Amino acid sequence: MQRATPNSRKRAACRKMLEGLVFLSLYGFVPILRLYNVNTLFTKPNRIAVFQFYGFVERFKFYAIWTLTEGANILTGLDFTGFGEYLWEGAVNVKPLEIELSSNFKAVLDSWNINTNICLMEYVYKRVTPRAGSQASAVLL
Image (cartoon, rainbow, N blue to C red; front, side, top):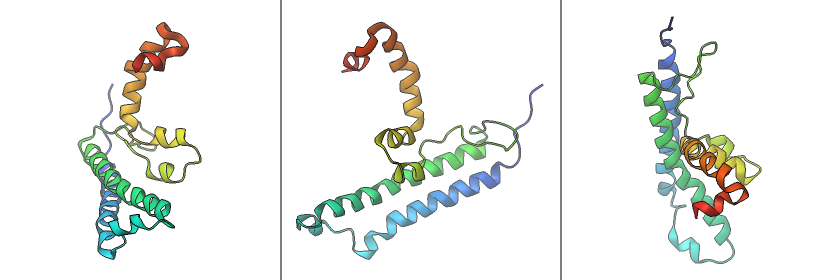
């Protein structure tokens, strides 16, 4: 017997929508502050800090799009992953806190574009690895 999808999806979808709108508003608000200026790139003392800040701000648009899309998937019921606590993590594609606060680069890669990484793992890397052995990455190049 198959269970019906729970009705708690509206709350989860609203939370994802608000999260996406916060990222979108932060992305739109920073240029208004005039902190986002190309002329600051030409000053040598703070060039690295400015690039780090610009990269941080540019990631907001991706966070916004992916969380808004995840909210839409929750509303349709495609994102449902389990009962008990009613998990809505089937279409999670980015984990912003794990990206920004990670201690190593592998954690960043595992938290960014998650579904594409899963697809590549299942349909490319696992199929190449048994035949090529330790040179699986060389075959893909």
